[in-house]
Length: 471
Image 1 (cartoon, rainbow, N blue to C red):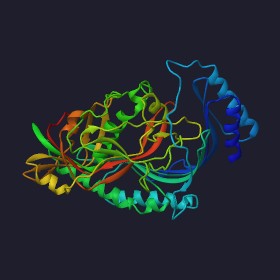
Image 2 (cartoon, rainbow, N blue to C red):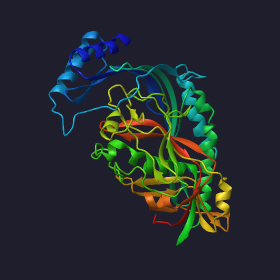
Image 3 (cartoon, rainbow, N blue to C red):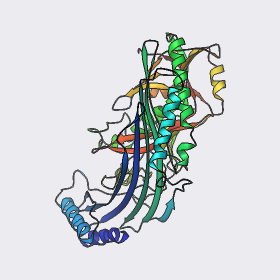
Image 4 (cartoon, one colour):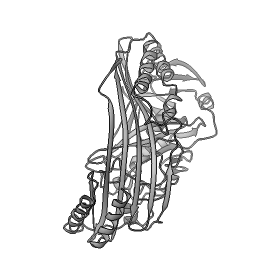
């Protein structure tokens, strides 16, 4: 199979391509669904194919096939070359930033290989989680539980001499629960994931996580008071901080959004390409995206353009530090790639994507953040969020939340609403704790839609003098 990738590069160069790359992928995956205790349609999937992307006549073109033969890939290259040559360059010719060529092999090790775990054992884990939820004796009429895993074997080569082999297994658990309590419905959607073997799921103690959450939300619904009015302080828990940084720092920092490529699909950005160095928040705000975190759901050592991954600062000390670039956007703006090009499958083009985005830890404990609040809200988790296409206006509705009075948590609060602009939120941060957490997500972008595994997180943070919105 590797010979086919080499054949693509040779053929593309012989046909006059100024640049060519081949990406051969084999993915084995499984998925299991339990809906209200009943197993739904589940199964295994195996996909294998090869993609080519090249530049010819100043234009870039992409194609793929799952017919892995010499004649098939030769025809594929000829078709992609023809597409590039017949496409007149737009306002500019496609260029890539100069990057180092890389040769490497790496693999995420597994203690329990996801490919060897039986369907019965995977389904049994979901059943244990469902039993734990029912064991709370609460009314949970909606219990939608999903367990998935994948094993991705990949080879990337390009005409510049890069040759990278990788094997990355991943596991994930997603749930959607509906709790009925005190005449109200409380819904929660969340996901856990990691790179590694089946042991990453069993180590999480998911039955306890779900049962504890149901009990907590029930108490919140039964005993919770209405949110206070007026100006107050808030402490936001790691789950909320994670979704905040992903949506309002990561997405608007994607260079293809800023340059307008994603406007008709995933949206635009409130930032401009010349905003590096611009003040966006207080000096307590530092936000990082790091693909190289071991065991993370968004882990990779090299992106899908063969660029080596490293820690990248999006915001640093309250100022915009950098954007997420692939080689094309980097060349357009006179900078270097940040190794942010990722594709969700062999038949998808790499796009600028996040990996593991988080708010950098501070020096305080979460308790210390709360102690210094006279009147406020501690919003630990949320049941709803939304944000506009430019990632400027955003809203979060609390699930587990509490009133803070004179530095102490006193009563549960029902559905407090934080509605705020991105600059106002980050400008209001005056302290970060040291209790960092990471959580998983499947980040959507592109057309056709590409869902990419990511982590997002951070510690608890404190924001001062904000007003709660309407439910």
